[in-house]
Image (cartoon, rainbow, N blue to C red; front, side, top):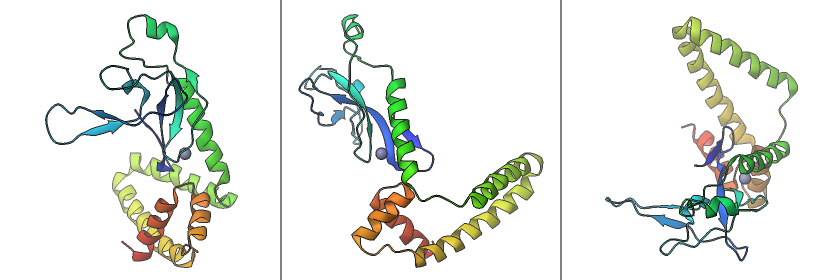
Length: 194
Ligand SMILES: [Zn+2]
């Protein structure tokens, strides 16, 4: 199971990753799909069972797609000794909390929105939510207008923003809280007016 942040998306997708006894991080495990050509791989701790050619996880930590890693906790010995050693699923809650704190730190580094705009967005959310319950046709008309507004403003902003050099893209990625590639893709998307 991976954790997705509503705003940052795949740039900061989190999961509980495995740590080996020597403190290193194992290679991804290839999952046997049974039949069919789609094979998947995972880095989640539950896959590192020590069975077959899979290494055994000695510890677990919160991991993020951006490369951030949380503090490592040893896997509970009792849990491993009670016959569930083929399924060492740790309680994910503390790891989720670590990852959440990481995303909050990312959020802190993003460019702040003016207070008046934040309040306006909140009001818009409330009004449109009510409209969706009371007058759904009107709500659909309204969100279409919001969509067009977003496309137009996005186009203007993407034209004006500095995103040509790697340094500019890096700065933009911090301001938005997403990976540089994602920041670049967003600028391209709005510049093309897709
Ligand atoms: Zn991250």
